Image (cartoon, rainbow, N blue to C red; front, side, top):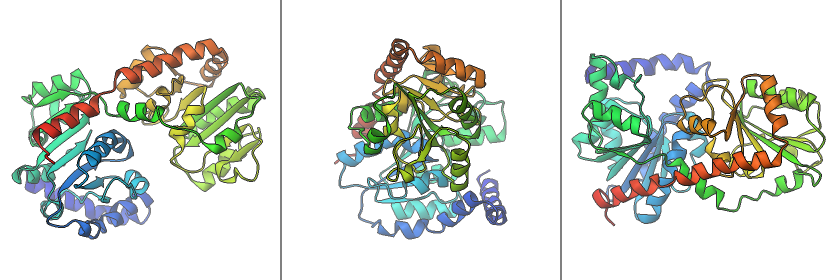
Length: 416
């Protein structure tokens, strides 16, 4: 099966070459991997190495509190951080806590041997969803302790479907992990059902990360200048897609009062789309990149990355995008600030959203009329305080996953 799998990976890599001529993301995916082994030249044979692997940016945020804690505890170790997707690598390629940030080589036998020989990690930590059979097999053969953290499993995944070669092949990959740290009881139950007992319910490490953020200085000079003293309501819309923006623009153009201000941070920063977004808003609008030329405006569009988390601290209400597409983005960032949250209807794959919707701290809109009703109800400050407080409490009560995982690592794997 491994032989056939390796052939499959190689064939797919060849097929991606013509696709890369027309797809920027695929081009980054292929070209970035050409630099992987060059980047690893800074790792010496005598170095102690910790390896973290994340699929993309979301998984990085889940691995981040563990990585930074280990970097503090084991300062003499070098950290190699790999990504599968360009959307993670391109944003975090200069991450200061890692010695090397690079793409994970494609999962072939040759790549796995070469990669692991080069970095020779004492421990490998995979975050949430990454199961690469060849690399996991090679890690096991070298007796390198490998952990899966912040994982979540569902019955529909291939590991738990009816009998078949693929199911057995992927289950065998799971058995290569020294220990699996999962987010919930259902994930543990599913793993136990296929004979895996080396499982701990640790929770979601993102709670630790966002809780820490809420207790740091989140002041932004441009936000202090943008928010007018006359304003009595600030909505921050983060990680928005076209459908999200369509609803928000309709509300801003037709319902927004003069004492309301809006900040929109699109998920994708594209000059043409940003210009289109700005031109579609009839209220006075300014871009973050033009913030020094004028400050008096009702709408601010954030045309850069890396600021959204702190911007949420200024919100009376947060709208988190993605709920009309493949699924919502990170709602824990606004939740930690005690901010009520509005999302679209596609949230059922996200445990935190399911819980907060049930607690009524997260409000679901399926069309413009519902958005209008929700935002009109948000004019009641006492109402906002009640549902926002529920969100903050939820984050606080679910911290501790990082400590659980770090304690295991210190006790069973790494020594100073």
